[in-house]
Image (cartoon, rainbow, N blue to C red; front, side):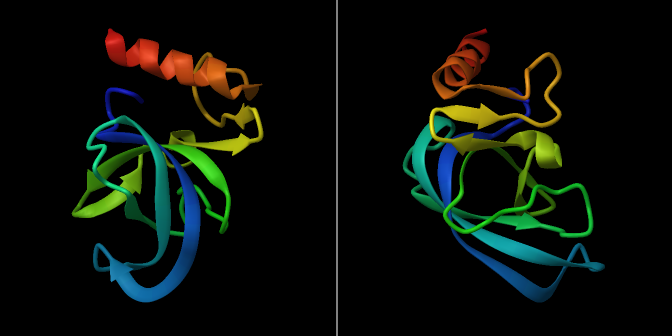
Length: 123
């Protein structure tokens, strides 16, 4: 996942907008505004971005004020989370909740997980 992501960030959801616009000509999408608190990989000058999700798919859901580690890439001209739920790691205080990452326990300490990401980028 680290290799696939063009950008890895720690961010906070500012807003979630359900649009009537179509993504890829077929499905209505939501647009989520993220305030970037820390950049782990990619362009550190980016301070906010929009992530596009299709609610009726395996895309990760977002809630205003929630904080997450996000593995992001561009797909068909839109900013997307890598592997849907797998590329969104929810932060809850000093813990993270991980969904669909091979060999990673569901819950672990935030600092331990961040160290794993940094070590993976160094390879």
